[in-house]
Image (cartoon, rainbow, N blue to C red; front, side):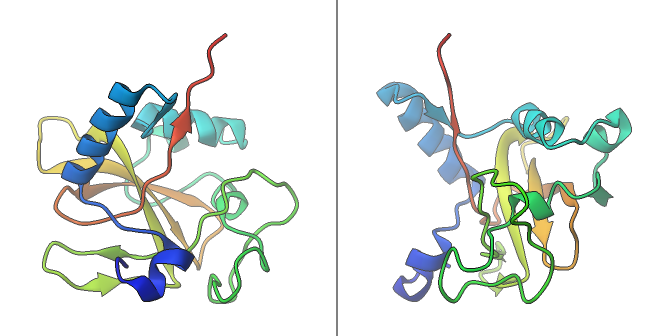
Length: 165
Protein backbone atom coordinates (compact mmCIF):
# COMPACT_ATOMS: atom_id res chain seq x y z
CA UNK A 1 0.00 0.00 0.00
CA UNK A 2 1.28 3.44 -0.69
CA UNK A 3 0.49 5.16 2.62
CA UNK A 4 3.06 5.77 5.35
CA UNK A 5 1.69 3.02 7.61
CA UNK A 6 2.74 0.36 5.13
CA UNK A 7 5.58 1.95 3.17
CA UNK A 8 8.45 0.77 5.36
CA UNK A 9 7.14 -2.76 5.78
CA UNK A 10 5.69 -3.50 2.34
CA UNK A 11 7.14 -0.94 -0.08
CA UNK A 12 5.12 0.70 -2.84
CA UNK A 13 2.84 -0.69 -5.52
CA UNK A 14 3.18 0.42 -9.14
CA UNK A 15 1.14 0.34 -12.35
CA UNK A 16 2.74 -0.96 -15.53
CA UNK A 17 3.03 2.64 -16.74
CA UNK A 18 5.02 3.38 -13.57
CA UNK A 19 7.45 0.56 -14.24
CA UNK A 20 8.02 1.75 -17.81
CA UNK A 21 8.96 5.17 -16.42
CA UNK A 22 11.20 3.58 -13.81
CA UNK A 23 12.81 1.41 -16.50
CA UNK A 24 13.48 4.48 -18.60
CA UNK A 25 15.08 6.28 -15.68
CA UNK A 26 17.21 3.28 -14.75
CA UNK A 27 18.49 2.89 -18.33
CA UNK A 28 19.37 6.59 -18.54
CA UNK A 29 21.18 6.60 -15.21
CA UNK A 30 23.04 3.34 -16.03
CA UNK A 31 23.29 2.12 -12.46
CA UNK A 32 23.26 -1.45 -13.73
CA UNK A 33 19.75 -2.18 -12.44
CA UNK A 34 16.59 -2.89 -14.39
CA UNK A 35 13.13 -4.35 -13.94
CA UNK A 36 13.14 -8.03 -14.94
CA UNK A 37 11.52 -9.41 -18.07
CA UNK A 38 9.50 -12.62 -18.09
CA UNK A 39 12.66 -14.41 -19.29
CA UNK A 40 14.63 -12.99 -16.35
CA UNK A 41 12.04 -14.46 -13.98
CA UNK A 42 12.38 -17.82 -15.75
CA UNK A 43 16.16 -17.68 -15.25
CA UNK A 44 15.64 -17.09 -11.52
CA UNK A 45 13.16 -19.96 -11.36
CA UNK A 46 15.62 -22.25 -13.17
CA UNK A 47 18.39 -21.29 -10.73
CA UNK A 48 16.06 -22.32 -7.88
CA UNK A 49 15.47 -25.75 -9.45
CA UNK A 50 12.47 -25.37 -11.77
CA UNK A 51 13.68 -27.48 -14.67
CA UNK A 52 10.48 -28.56 -16.41
CA UNK A 53 9.99 -26.54 -19.60
CA UNK A 54 6.23 -26.97 -19.29
CA UNK A 55 6.36 -25.51 -15.74
CA UNK A 56 8.54 -22.59 -16.85
CA UNK A 57 6.10 -21.67 -19.64
CA UNK A 58 2.82 -22.46 -17.85
CA UNK A 59 0.47 -19.57 -17.10
CA UNK A 60 -2.32 -19.32 -14.55
CA UNK A 61 -1.69 -21.97 -11.91
CA UNK A 62 1.06 -23.07 -9.58
CA UNK A 63 4.36 -24.11 -11.08
CA UNK A 64 7.42 -25.96 -9.88
CA UNK A 65 7.97 -27.43 -6.42
CA UNK A 66 9.22 -25.12 -3.66
CA UNK A 67 10.62 -22.14 -5.63
CA UNK A 68 7.99 -19.76 -4.26
CA UNK A 69 8.70 -20.72 -0.67
CA UNK A 70 12.39 -20.03 -1.24
CA UNK A 71 11.63 -16.45 -2.35
CA UNK A 72 9.53 -15.54 0.69
CA UNK A 73 11.10 -13.68 3.58
CA UNK A 74 12.25 -15.76 6.51
CA UNK A 75 10.40 -15.33 9.79
CA UNK A 76 12.00 -12.61 11.86
CA UNK A 77 13.57 -10.63 9.01
CA UNK A 78 10.97 -7.88 9.21
CA UNK A 79 9.12 -7.30 12.44
CA UNK A 80 5.36 -7.68 12.06
CA UNK A 81 5.32 -9.00 8.49
CA UNK A 82 4.13 -12.55 8.14
CA UNK A 83 2.88 -14.84 5.43
CA UNK A 84 -0.09 -15.67 7.72
CA UNK A 85 1.54 -18.84 9.08
CA UNK A 86 2.25 -20.53 5.77
CA UNK A 87 5.48 -21.86 4.29
CA UNK A 88 8.61 -19.77 4.14
CA UNK A 89 12.09 -21.18 3.90
CA UNK A 90 15.21 -20.51 5.89
CA UNK A 91 16.96 -23.50 4.31
CA UNK A 92 18.62 -21.42 1.64
CA UNK A 93 19.08 -17.68 1.72
CA UNK A 94 18.27 -16.53 -1.79
CA UNK A 95 18.34 -12.89 -0.71
CA UNK A 96 14.96 -12.24 -2.33
CA UNK A 97 12.89 -11.98 0.89
CA UNK A 98 9.48 -11.26 -0.61
CA UNK A 99 6.87 -9.78 1.71
CA UNK A 100 3.10 -10.28 1.25
CA UNK A 101 2.32 -6.76 0.03
CA UNK A 102 -0.86 -7.62 -1.87
CA UNK A 103 -1.90 -5.46 -4.84
CA UNK A 104 -4.17 -2.58 -5.77
CA UNK A 105 -6.85 -3.04 -8.43
CA UNK A 106 -7.57 -0.50 -11.15
CA UNK A 107 -10.89 0.12 -9.33
CA UNK A 108 -8.91 1.41 -6.35
CA UNK A 109 -9.25 -1.35 -3.76
CA UNK A 110 -6.35 -3.05 -1.99
CA UNK A 111 -6.35 -6.84 -1.67
CA UNK A 112 -4.11 -9.64 -0.54
CA UNK A 113 -2.11 -7.86 2.17
CA UNK A 114 -0.48 -10.61 4.24
CA UNK A 115 -1.67 -13.22 1.75
CA UNK A 116 0.18 -12.67 -1.52
CA UNK A 117 2.74 -10.66 -3.42
CA UNK A 118 2.63 -9.83 -7.14
CA UNK A 119 5.74 -8.74 -9.04
CA UNK A 120 5.79 -7.12 -12.47
CA UNK A 121 7.90 -8.14 -15.40
CA UNK A 122 8.47 -5.76 -18.30
CA UNK A 123 6.91 -8.29 -20.70
CA UNK A 124 3.53 -7.46 -22.20
CA UNK A 125 1.39 -10.43 -23.14
CA UNK A 126 1.25 -11.47 -26.78
CA UNK A 127 -0.87 -9.21 -28.94
CA UNK A 128 -1.83 -6.81 -26.21
CA UNK A 129 -1.09 -3.56 -24.47
CA UNK A 130 -3.56 -4.14 -21.66
CA UNK A 131 -1.83 -6.97 -19.80
CA UNK A 132 1.65 -8.09 -18.78
CA UNK A 133 3.27 -11.15 -17.23
CA UNK A 134 3.77 -11.16 -13.47
CA UNK A 135 4.93 -13.55 -10.80
CA UNK A 136 2.81 -14.16 -7.74
CA UNK A 137 3.61 -15.77 -4.41
CA UNK A 138 0.73 -16.89 -2.20
CA UNK A 139 0.69 -17.66 1.49
CA UNK A 140 -1.04 -21.00 0.83
CA UNK A 141 1.55 -22.36 -1.61
CA UNK A 142 5.25 -23.13 -1.79
CA UNK A 143 5.10 -22.80 -5.55
CA UNK A 144 5.30 -19.72 -7.78
CA UNK A 145 2.61 -18.48 -10.13
CA UNK A 146 3.19 -17.01 -13.60
CA UNK A 147 0.11 -15.15 -14.70
CA UNK A 148 -1.34 -12.31 -16.72
CA UNK A 149 -2.12 -9.04 -14.94
CA UNK A 150 -4.00 -6.00 -16.21
CA UNK A 151 -1.56 -3.10 -16.63
CA UNK A 152 -3.80 -0.68 -14.69
CA UNK A 153 -3.47 -2.74 -11.50
CA UNK A 154 -0.64 -1.95 -9.11
CA UNK A 155 1.90 -4.57 -8.06
CA UNK A 156 5.35 -4.71 -6.51
CA UNK A 157 8.61 -4.58 -8.44
CA UNK A 158 12.04 -6.11 -7.90
CA UNK A 159 15.16 -5.07 -9.73
CA UNK A 160 17.74 -7.18 -11.54
CA UNK A 161 21.35 -6.08 -11.48
CA UNK A 162 23.39 -6.44 -14.64
CA UNK A 163 26.88 -7.73 -14.04
CA UNK A 164 29.41 -6.88 -16.68
CA UNK A 165 31.82 -9.69 -17.48
